[in-house]
Image (cartoon, rainbow, N blue to C red):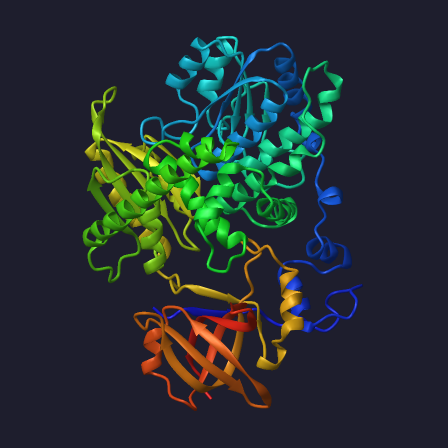
Length: 583
């Protein structure tokens, strides 16, 4: 299906006040991101850790939480950090664990098993923690929806500090001693988009500020928090949080720390897993590091990833990286195999508005990945459901574990809300969800109802994938000066995407296929009144070579990048989409 090109309207002259003379395209990009005054522009283009990071004690319960943690350290109480099995949860756990170990705390961690325990606290874990003699439990990246488990801890004289970032539920865990969550309706914390690791990081900052008030044998060194920024950058990118505000600062400085990391485990991953550009950037985090950290929790247990992140021994790290690579390879194999089965189950798409597949014993750790692949391919919401081999003993019913991914315009988690009568558990975000169903009757009822909801909601929606183009420019605008201006917008990611540009009426000077199987397009292009010829590269656009001839004119949507070879550098336009020019 052809993509829909959506070009942002050009800003009017003088729309941005109090800014020195600047390139008109750069001003357009700043305006597109909501920056229309000198201060906001300076804060964005020149993020500064020391002056722009917020005070952790702006959180309502931060003082109460930090004082209780420091008291527990002072009294040698057993502390349990309870995390999650994805990259954000594992990094959150490692951040808080590392700080508490510096304090000399008696601290342990528990990360639930995805397949057997699921997300968040559970009663079995709570009982084991109580039996283990722990007096303080700190959740990271979870806990906000666990009112029953928190109440159970309180009844058994175990105090709980909830640190989370997920949406506030209908009922808060009011049995908690403190709740640190920027997403709460009554939160005083100005920045609402922290990931779980970001919240854990703010707790560490609070501990550093408050520790002098307690007679402790060990202290967290001043500046220690900055050496946690590599983990925070991984978590922020991995959880697809918007790279604005504090997150932008965390990731910008986190990439610097990542490049100089002292962590033996991360050093080993970087050593073994190269990046095509050789640059440690958000793409490297998102496409190389995060999938490997997630693989541990998807296929086996996330404790493997946690041990790697905190490892200080090169030999141990080497062993753990090999295990993680094995898990990731296994994850890739399972995903590829399941994807074929799911596509066969879905069959012809035709007029379907929601794609759904149900299979026996599909690995629950990758149903979300496969749903995402299907949704991306067809630009439709997709749900993949695995029938578990284990029955739910208490209910005496077959258990189904599902995951969904959606497209812009269809809130899949709101759709689940309408199907609540058929669901045992569910949760998620507008474009991603997870759920469990007990019993075949509930499965059939759910399938019928959510399909009807999707058909109704998407009936008149334009389902073409939208390319949001930041500006229409000329080839003459592209030079090294302009590229270095664009670099100031990094790091790119959610909420601050690498800008897409449109150039019309490009003349084909040369065209050829490249790559071992000829699946990529490379062409030299020019434009009237512009003497410089630019190279464009279109990955997976090789079929266009048969359609294009020298002298043809095309319109191209592209990103601007750099191609390096044998010590040479050149600006390169990476094709995102193209079409024949209309004139």
